[in-house]
Length: 145
Image 1 (tube, rainbow, N blue to C red):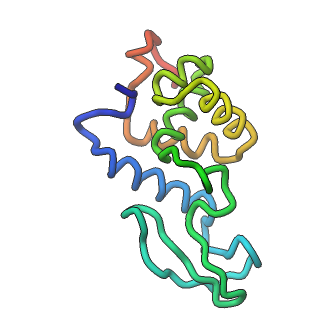
Image 2 (cartoon, rainbow, N blue to C red):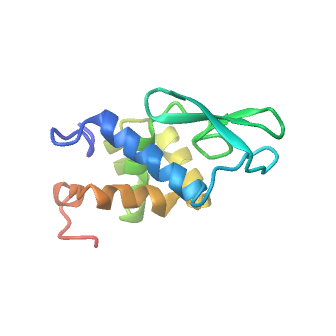
Image 3 (cartoon, rainbow, N blue to C red):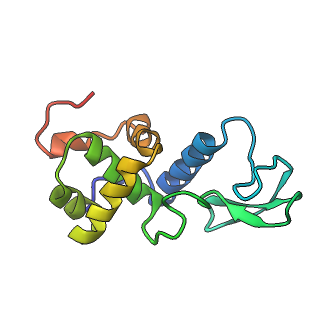
């Protein structure tokens, strides 16, 4: 059982929250094309029920919320990335991250390296605080706030 498998928050809701937070972190004012940086963008449709797909009217290319981020080709859910980000900011070792996220050690190590390079680390970690998760109690900590 991972830290985010809780009865009071459905996993789909958590994934939607992570996607929304990613969208706000990437484009605080207006969505821009990651290919040509134009703001002439229109929504096409949602996919996987939480991510938005866009069409750039300037260059004609399509993109989504994850295009150009460390999550772009990842099969790991955003909520798992958020959990890893939280544990990383709580100074947990890679072995603990791997165990709690439910991935292998090499995958957790790659996630940690990518998160450390990313400016989105604290954005994802804030999702945990927003939902008032208290996973550190399960890990034996008094508080990390």
